[in-house]
Image (tube, rainbow, N blue to C red; front, side):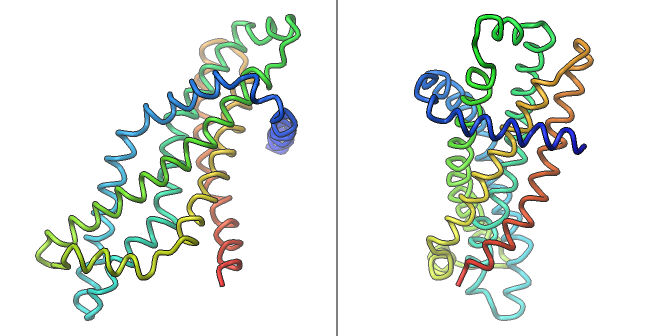
Length: 248
């Protein structure tokens, strides 16, 4: 475990040092960004719509019973901005895109294509890791913004249509706008950017260290997804504590 952590830290540092060279791989960054965003947009929409609806369905009746129907929009809005949208989108991207990164790079490692790159004096980190990390670091915050908006709409639909809540559409968004400010959205975007770095580095690290043929590729994909999700939840705790201290 400590060896893997050390290797991931070194990989992250070498990727950071290679950032000035990113313009050379702009086409690969755009291709990766399109693949991540286009492939995940429909799933993000469905997931966010129902997360917002379930959140309103769970909290709405309790708030109405206690005479707090005016805060249903605030609860849904803040929960989606600060926690649910960044974490759920990160888990979605880790499962869908992180596994694809690990499988693609892992197959290249198994079939000695990465050794061929080194033979041609091409750094695999510059050619394979850097475009993927940049693309996922841009795509995930964009998906989180989209997820927040769709989740708000889902919560509003359930709040206005459900007889146990019966909060009008206008009252729902009025409550939401009074509490959700730019800092709440920035909170979620900050988390999503850090989660994207975690997914990119972990997935590429597992791909580069794949050995053992097709069975090894399967192990690398599994470890990439599991390790990414575990690290996302651990990092989420520390980021939440830090951002709560900065929120005055």
